Length: 213
Ligand code: CTP
Image: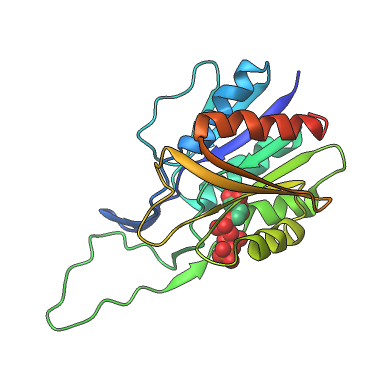
């Protein structure tokens, strides 16, 4: 049976017991891909950050919060997977030291948080990738969409990257109809316009199946 590992949603990087840093990811893209992969008969593991979505039926759901926890779960599942699709909006940074108690505001003082870089999970997988595994990344850009996506595809040793443009004043997060650019490892490019995430999940999995899944 074909085994597919999908990541979805945001990560949460804690500051103290009541606060965190995160992003607007809804997780919808990853959940749609997980449902579609299940319908195609795959064994699906979904590693998800916090979302408001219902767990897809008959999909193994692993919930995590931080990027470090997502990395741990993904590395554990990676050897058993034929394909990994990383839709998650992994926070690029985490707080250097998480306060054990709620940080109190101090009068007349600015708050400075020291952040450290999180591990790049997908890049790590790319470094360990064997020929028979298929690796798919996502790329959300506000500028130079094609150039940045092509660079990430190469740097992370991916088979396919799905790039989306975040237009000024709008948000791709939660939007129902979006445009994507797909670039594969052979440099083949395809623009897919104005489709729902449900429709895009099918198109992306069709492409992944062409890679031999
Ligand atoms: N990704 C990851 N680990 C990270 C950051 C990103 O695995 N720490 C994955 C995402 O899940 C996505 C891809 O890498 O599939 C690209 O993520 P993106 O945030 O667009 O790119 P970055 O590598 O963070 O590059 P930049 O900050 O230059 O946009």
